[in-house]
View (spheres, one colour):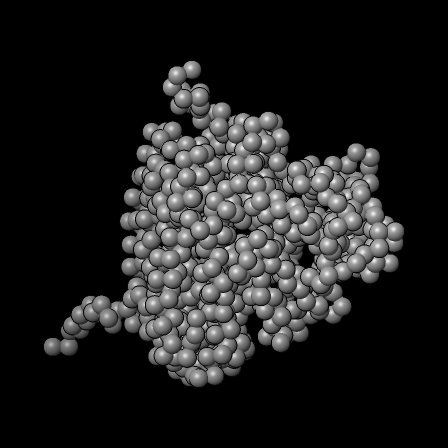
Length: 519
Length: 118
């Protein structure tokens, strides 16, 4: 009886182990340190990678199946949306500007995340962490693709979406998300995970995704909602990876604590500054409002985030340094950001506008302590000016923060009437910041941030004109030359919503002259 | 502190003076947040300070209804946040202004749109 008995199929657990950790081997021809140089240089000490708890027990095989199913559903909805002219069902053409912001500023980050996780997935010596990072890398690439596909339908009908990859590398405000991610993926793998998996995905992602996706639902954009659902299950896996990674590092060695705390301070603040764009979208760009930025902050940051840092206190972690200032900012940053884009809308490929009376009333209700005293008067003034044909545009380029690269529009903690200025010197040059926290980030790694590609400075250095442009020529118009370099279509992609092509087209398609019922 | 890196980490700063045709000056008008942020302008060091207030700033801030009401003799100046007394007959350079300096001015009595400091 020497017939071979066929082995029983592996159980789920064994199969999982075999298809993840079982794929790892230690090198023999070359020392491990030489093959995996990135895994130790940041100073994080790992004694036993086997202690890594895999946050989601997926093999690649299961992953493909699962994602493939989701993909089918998503593309069915996207197709149906296109065939039924779903773009006509949205609340108002102003809504599309939220999508423009998303495809310009968020979608490219998915691609950067894909690259970042691919790098991390190559560099860790721990198999569990590598597999998790590889799957997330594939997730991020998929998000980049599905977002692009979902929003491409709108690109057929609206301006401001036709050249987003080109803009991401050039347009002034897109340097904010771009520099955030370049900062993250030019750090070591452990810092990258703290930055993206923990600070961004775990602490802040709800503040990014929920407002956009519920905003889409409220404004009749089922295509984007479906994309959101399709990404949501990935996001929860990403969040789990973030918290697992932090706990693992903290449990491996007490020397890791100060390094991780500093990264948390840095990346919480950088993420918070980046979310300024979301705050503004939520309070100003959705014709049908979901919740205010302040409410979202209270629910997702102060509520869930507060509980998280209490939980991490047992490892010696305290809340990030900028936490209190961020909580105070909930009353202000959306208004300050909207004013910034209103000021510089000549150079931004999406539209801004003054909220209508009903919207102003909503803002008053949501911001009872600050809106009427600080922000309403200027919006009403801007509306009056616009009504007499003097739509205000700021014609001088702004001063930027060296770290977050946002125009210096933020105010002092404790006094929302004064712009916050911070400065320092490094090797004989002055550097300026919007806050103590952006200044601290610079102070820790000045060699990194002296390389900041600050759009305003780049324009003044002459690096943002097309080849052959001669700035010394009589009648040279620098703004026009910069727009040409950006490849923004002046008069279509930029300026106020009022009078825009988007507005006119949408009203025509809907058979609405924009004047209401009785003409 | 410095950047932790695998190799030598040294890169040229992007915004040194010689990369610009003229030094950069940052200017902020206090209590007038209609202008969302301070502005950044390349201005030759030999520009007289008086030309800054007389020729440059009207182009930058003239759209604000308060601008025409400014009594320049009453204006309070700050450099890097500290009270500062420029001499309008001297140049920017002679007034001690260098590349990437930040100056601000307060216009007493002018409180912006509807008193909102905007």
